[in-house]
Image (cartoon, rainbow, N blue to C red; front, side, top):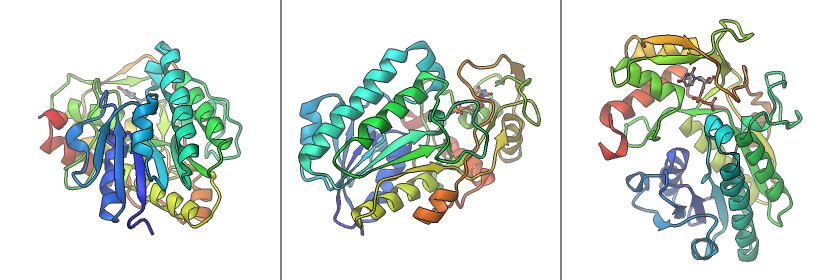
Length: 325
Ligand code: UDP
């Protein structure tokens, strides 16, 4: 159904966006990428897509990128909890104001569907896991607040919008050609791989005294290609006349920081680690109920933590210094 569809992908040079662009091009879509390249990587953009270097807050760039668009996939955003606690205004500007600019242009262009990369951080820390979509949204950090506000902007728009609330995106293209390359890297799995390979001295566990089974934080890790599959399903549903909706994208299985260390240990080698202080803004447990996505989108993740770590390692082995290496 996406063959020949004209899709605008913001943030298509970033981690999840670049995987989506690859898959959408494989499906025969006509993809335009709008990416500022502040954190994205030009070599990550599939050669079949047209790259426009620009910011989602720049109306001229957005107008150019939106020409003829049937649908928008909006990945471009700031997405680090710790950073958002330090610089909350930037999160409002990029994530909320940026989404508003894009939504205005999308309405003017008459797009038929819009998919927002949202997050489990829109739920609060007191929400019991597994988290269903109708739980109250009481974000406990500015990142989650900015994404909840972006959802509200889109809920009021003229086109159907689907909010995909990612839990912990991880993994890479299995052939090692695309992967995660952040500066500085803050995500658990790449940091564990760097510690296991001696690129960093050790991994600091952010709190070993949480009220969780082994005292470390529990998250729901989802393979980036499983996330992309959900985008395709959400787009197809809306382009077929279906409504927009909010979906949690997680496996329903929680893994502690220690379990991730063990999984990387099995695949890559022992991960030197030290127990440290809690990270501000971290909820102790975020695990999805993936029931609505299964029921309404027909989506369920197919790649487990071992596959996630294997693919992350394939990327790291072939690109130890990221796209620059
Ligand atoms: N974490 C950790 N040490 C690190 C980085 C992350 O213990 O150096 C923990 C973090 O507290 C969280 C989990 O690993 O419980 C996943 O963190 P990440 O930053 O990858 O994703 P987030 O959950 O913030 O989206």
